[in-house]
Structures are given as structure tokens and as C-alpha cells.
Length: 443
Image 1 (cartoon, one colour):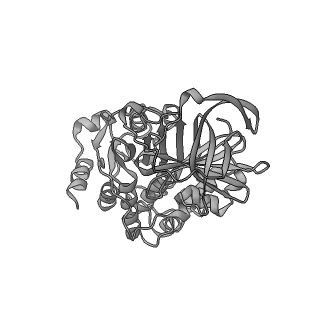
Image 2: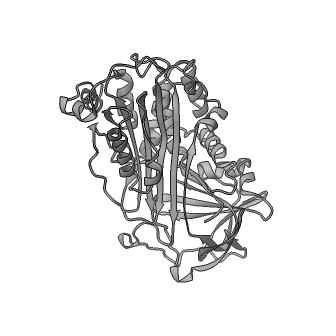
Image 3: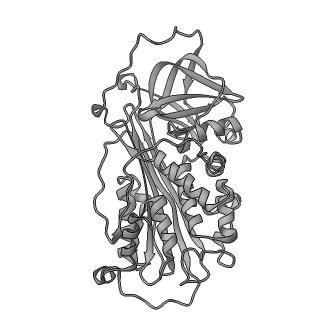
């Protein structure tokens, strides 16, 4: 056992009387079916906010944090098939609504859930992720965590995880060690179904997401039969490498599915690569830290939803890879937007082949605990929010140098790229990890 996990889980198994008292008196085990309430992912992406520092957490047993950043090493392949499947499944069928998710964040929650399961329950999760063993999953997840988490003067991408445990159930030490060592999961303990513990969970979510998902966090509540609650978060903020000039903003019509609405557009003329395929065009705007935000615009008469069935579009959104870019002068109009969505993941995960963890008659949670029977996941909620404006993160905190005398000759191709109808977007790291993806139907 590592020194980190030993410190964390000695605290879990040796709880002070004061903490027990604060969490509530222990109760006899009810003779009814138990279940897990899994917060699959609560995340936020901000491209326009000041950075805040987290404070303390109520009912904390021990806290873990990862402070560094490492590039995705050679030999470790990201689960792009899983990223594409999650993106297509949960963005399709949005109808007239906006939708946003973090493929990386949901992946982390699924990987942690695989640690808690065995048998066919684990096999279904590993098949969706696209990996053949939990040992290989740990290596992959650890590498993705390190590549997707870090803070610098240019960019902030902070992953966090927590497990919330009952005060009257024992848990398998080796499994808890893995959650601490691989996923940097902080541990908390208390009486499920109480306002005190629910408030602590909501406070942790708000702390990790800088208060940007308070409404969604308020809906997360435990039940007296909850065995464990798993939460993962992602906070992201970055500045454009080339900010928009607010003086060039203008108001014009956006053709939303529900009817035309007015939107405030940011405008710029840029020399950049323009990508296109059958029924769509796309551009990538650079973000500090080597990241980028892709905007994919359907052709007139093509729905954004239809593009989710296009393999080339999905590869672009999930890996930031596209072929055949043409260097062009692009007249770019991007609507400012602040969108949020909260997704129930259960039906979508069932459609992707993950079924056993939701059925107490067949689920296998023996790696988690031997103190409860008939365990299943009853709640899997994913919430996300994305905001963009002209600057990104505190423009005053950065110095931008854009030499103008080393650009290639002006291209002959000119593109008017106006996002005035429903479009897709994704934010992808320099390592090709899709931090978030979304569909904007109404900015």
C-alpha cells in the first residue's frame, strides 16, 4: 500500500468519535435492498472566469489532490472509441435544447465504477471503455488523469474525485487503496440520507466547480439505503491565444430550432486552417496551454444532430484530429454563450451495453463491500456548464506575443464562417483528450 493510500484509509477505518458524532449515530443495518447513488460527473468549463481557490470541506476524512501535469506517454492509447460513443449517445436527441458533457470526466467515473465491481458488471464497463483488464485500465486512467489535470499561468484543468461512505459499513481496503492511488479520490464518511451529509456533498461539488453548478449540485441527495456515492468533477479555464475584440461585437439573428432569437456575436478575421466534409465545415480556435476549441457548423439544410453520425466529425470532436485542412482567411462570427445541462446517464449507458450495475439481481459489487447485499446503481447524473466570451481567463494575467511577420502568404481562399444556426463544439487538449463537447441550439 502506498504512503498516500495508507494515510487516507487508515483515517477511513479508524474514525474518531467526534466525526461519528458529527455524522450521526450509527444505525442497525436495514434488511432491504441496498444501492449506490453514483454522481457520474459534475463538471464545468470556463473560458472567461477568474480563478478561485478551494476552501475546506465538511466531514472530510482525508483529502487527495494532484498538483502536477504530465503529457500522455507514448504507448498509452486514449479510449477514443469510448469518447465517441459517449459523445454521440448523450448529445444526440437534444431536440431544441442545448447539451454539453465531458467525455473525459464520464470516463473517469466509469473507470472508478469498474474498480468497485467484478464479473459481468465489470466486463460490461471494460468493454465500453475498450480495454481488456482492470490492471490496464489503471495504467490508462492514471495517465489520462495526469495529462488532463494541471494548473499554470496559461491554463487550468483540474480533475477531482471523491467517495462518500456510510458510517456503518465496512469497505474492502484494496479497492479503496486503488481509488486513492489511481484516481486521487478524497474520502468522506457520514450518515446517508441526512441533510448534513447531503449539504457536505453539495458543498464539495460547488467547491470543486467554483460555484458554477450550484443549481445542479442542489439536486444531489443521498438516501438512507445509499451504500456509497461517487463523484468526479472537472474545472477548466483558459484564455484564447488570440482574443476577440469586443468593439467588433454585433447583435444579429440566430436561427434556433424553436425560432429566431437575437444573439451577441464575436467577430474576427483570421488566417487559419479550414476543414470541411460532407455536410459540414469546421475551424479550431487556439487556447493557451496548447489546447483548442473546435466549432463544427452543419451546411444549410443539415442538422447538427445528423453530424453525430459522421465518423470524421466524431474523430474531430473526440481526438481533435481532422484531415485535409485548407489555409484560408476566415471571417469568423461566434455567438457568446453560457449553456448548462444535466443528463441522466442510466438509459444511455444501458444502450451502450452497461446494464448489470443497474440491476441488483445480477450486479456484482463484491470488490467494494461484503456488508451489504443486492447493490445496484440507482442514480448516475452528469452536469456541465460552458461559458465563452471575448477574452477567456483574466486577460490581465497573461502576456500574448503574436509575431506578425512570420505568417505565410495570404491565401486565396476566403471563408465566411458564421455560427448562426445550431452547431457542435468540443474542447480538446494538446494530447488529444476531449475535455468537453456540446451542441448549441440556442446561445
